Image (cartoon, rainbow, N blue to C red):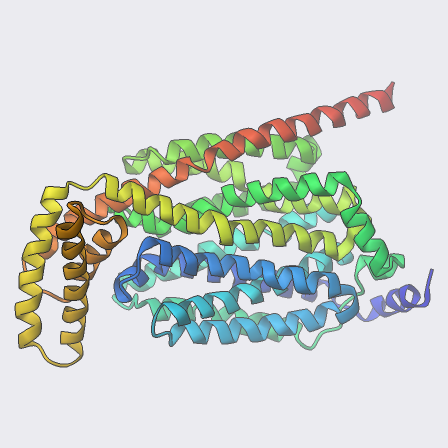
Length: 494
């Protein structure tokens, strides 16, 4: 045992494991409240800043792939910098990112704030996953599942708070973003002044080079990274869009997200008994099958009953994906240490943020436009143009600015229609949205809302179907791993 490992073991007597675990859980609550509130305001941002689905997808995506940036940079340095240093950086990031979003003036600042928050989220995972593994080395998968209770648990808390604010008439999107500050203050109090244990890599005397070799020279690690990209896309891609998509269809989408994550939290809390009955590969196989079936069903949801039933199956499918993937890597490739755990999170979040979330937004834009009645839309836009021009001339000042902004969007879509003979896909939805949010009192506003809502709901649901084939691939991969584990267990017994 080297000197660093001996010193690390000597410091363990000064630790407060329960407080460290509780603080880690609260830090994860901050990340999940951020996920819930950003998801809850995506529909509002489209109206407040006249954004299209693709732009909102990039904002939502930044709140994910920024996670990957901080993971890939800092997870390999966790042994060197220490977990407490990473937690302090996360705390500053959550505070600063929330304030940037609250005072945002447009797409650029919204994107920047979402990115900073996500980088703070990544720092929490980079520090707290190895922290939990170091605190409970004999039951890593169980404790990682119980730690990750607080990602869906925080989404439940944040989602219910956002819904309550709407019910009280104080549901301004800025107030919802400010909810992130509450768990941030709490985990700062619990963790910032505490001693932290050494990582498992330091305890075992694994060098930086040894950690890199264990991570990148192991074929199983490469397979699990590929699988992590798919499991994260299934869990977090639709999860990011569910509130906005269902709200466009007239349902309380945030409550459906709360329901899904409530099931996930309960199931993760009960991970111990489940893991005693099923192996990690068995859990992953069942998760892949259920999540695919639930998501496909959800994509056809036409009523509250069918949406809730599909959401139940989907929740049972995705609840164990993330923590079981981390536990599997920590147990099967232990020398990969903090780097292996960090890289898993990096690949998962980067895939969702850079590919899955924006592409779902782009698919939703195209599918929504394909479902529009073009003649009906042109008539509404012509009426909107006349109404906005007349009303904006009579309304100087800030309110008139909103009207003129809506007029510019409507005029742009009509100009494209006259030049090309067909309405442009993204600009048309933006024009309808700009008219709805312009403050106009013209009766055509309700007609525009009646056109746009169902179209955006349909487009969003269709985008869910594009994720389903990933579940089929995972069933094959996890099925093969499950059968290999059973064969080895039978050989060991025999």
